[in-house]
Length: 98
Image (cartoon, rainbow, N blue to C red; front, side):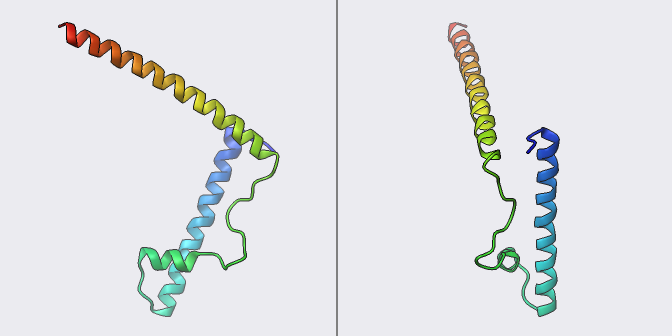
């Protein structure tokens, strides 16, 4: 299974399309039944029946890749926060001296 950015982009787009279609179907059902249309009624009508799986299923192979990607992202974010803290400390130090 590929975890390239293009593959992930296509997977997210397909997921968005599935969700959008569920919303449209729920709106059609509510309209046909003459029921009130609200955010919660659309959410209830668009919910899959109990016992069924909805959304994308993940494979065992994709989970370690996701963990590795998230771990790397956490490392980058941590380094970025450290750089920002140093810049802030430096800026505050210069402000106190002025």
